[in-house]
Length: 309
Image (cartoon, rainbow, N blue to C red):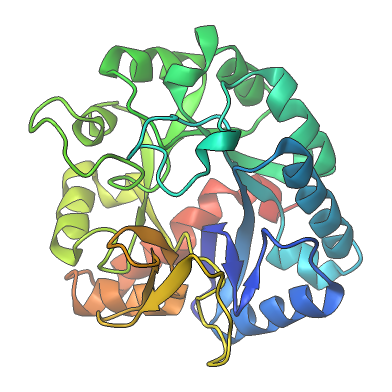
């Protein structure tokens, strides 16, 4: 049993966590498929949308999870990604620009309340440059939330000031950034220059080439990194799953991925943690011990406060 821990899951097994709303049979089906792929815990991730809809999803999913002890162990807390991200094309990724807003406590606190309180939110991803005076970062960190930078083009000084306010993690390094970047001063190198930062990386071979992800992890140190799928409902989905009309499945690589229909742009990962673990050993040159650290023990350590709750 690998006991994978995935800190960013937007949907799984044909079921989107951005649905309106989830039902008990749906969440139990997701749980069954995750356990079959040797997953110990995930952070269900709710992404940028109308604030009321985001709150509804958090509230309805929390109610389903709280009815079942095994679900609480499998889904111990949420990851909220957005809506306080960079509105700039490229850096916002697939997040809807109509709902991206600056980071304030007034935006984030109702989402945390909808999740059932601060004890049920492990991670919040935001763009530090969109957080005036880093007030939201400071408040979240003081509450014990892991504050993550992501979908950002923050200058290095901004990242370092945000770190002093409580920023400690960078979400899916190398993704959520523009296709064309300055060869020296870019968000990837800036993020890697923040001395105490930790990082997640997507291990599907699409979002990052295998060789590049492996090289970055070696440079940064395995102990500072974790793997995540950042997967959507296409991951481990039944063959007859129907994706949204704007998203299509690409199975041309070693692991599948979804793209915005008719474009080369990614619209969410479609691999499981088991797929990623195999990629790490077969294509990235990691030992089984190293792949286990990146996929299981280190992400478990990262969110142990919530997994032990």
